[in-house]
Image 1: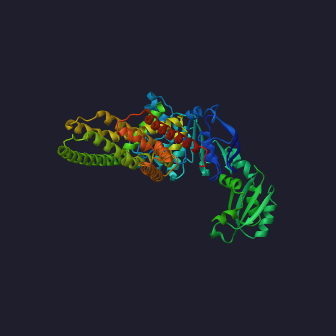
Image 2: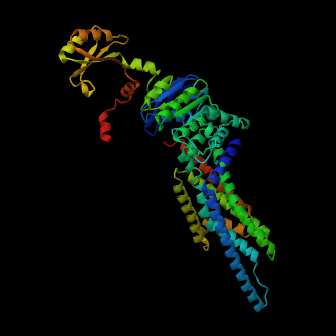
Length: 323
Length: 263
């Protein structure tokens, strides 16, 4: 449905988007994940035909976004970061206006508006002025606006930004409900959102793709091994030598526990190869060695940590200096 | 066409749901009514004096009251009232859309920029006509009592001049609005530009040097004078229409440039 090849966008010397390529299949939800200024919005604006690319091509439903911009625009629904709303219009008037400029035939306008309001659950606010709506409702009207002409592709730029947790989960469910019928690209810098909503994730940083995969695979692939964390009461050197004897342990790290009420305790992290479960053996070793086992759990790298690893290789001193 | 109509309807509704249209139309009608009555009173007073003088000298009075009233009124409204009020109508046309983010939606919709520009321009022009139309009532009232009868041809040409002058000012104002996200800035810049045009025009009005002739030819107000004297010259009509086309063309380029600018 969406094919992007070697897409580049430069502003003078600066490259906002640098040689990006990816494909999105019909009905998929693709998440763009990256820190602010990574090039997410620029990429989306190129796809919607708002900005021309400096190099490379992007096709939507077979149409080039630059050459056949009008055909592409008919097939795209777009929610920019700030929902493009007219505060002095009522919800239904506004959606009817958008339907008309998106090329919906006059006879179908009323029907499409009803449908979009039903999908986004704003029907009971249809006669409200948009300026009177809460943020959550405004965002839903923004999404309704993006689907009112029943487009093949829906592009949502930070659809949950500025919403409270309840509203956020409502919007997420709404987006999931749209998938299947529509192909969706959404951008976010909230990781849990990608984990729960998207089929595939593109991690984008400084205009380049750092990683592209399913959320599950990304987690597996990047953590590179299993880790077990234990908290025990006992003596540090003895613990280290005991843990190093465990079969399959690649590395042992001893530190102090996070909780302050366990001052006298020790924490240790044991790393092993991917797919090796050491929990039983570690428990046996620790208890057998006369240590008091307080806690044992398997820790997996969250997407959060992967994201940090991929996007923060720049020196943290720079950030501190900026502060 | 459908795209233009959709934009046109939204824009026109937009004027009437915000207070701006009511304020501008109200201010215009108060100012116009006030000016009209003052002009009417002073021209009539002058006519009475002229008549008295004519009676003494025996020659017939050389004054056409209705003609004087129309000329002065149309001249005053065009020269002093429109440059103040039109910036208020045009300041938000694009600046507001850019600020709200709706411009991005319009520009990613399957409509061309020409449709956006024309839809918005025609809406502002319609509002302008709605603002101007009630003043025609003055002439209906005056016409009932007027002797010699009201020269309707001059009323017509004067209002054609007003319409064309307004059309050019609206196109210029819309262009300036497309350059910024801040409608106050757009309004002030438009107002200052109109004032400058007025001052330049006033400063060369009585001069006849070669340079002054060039300025006079280019002056929007200079061409306007002829309409208020009952002369409908195609040169003047073409001059104004060119002004409108230039304004719309610049607006179009300005919208286009938004796609190339850094966000």
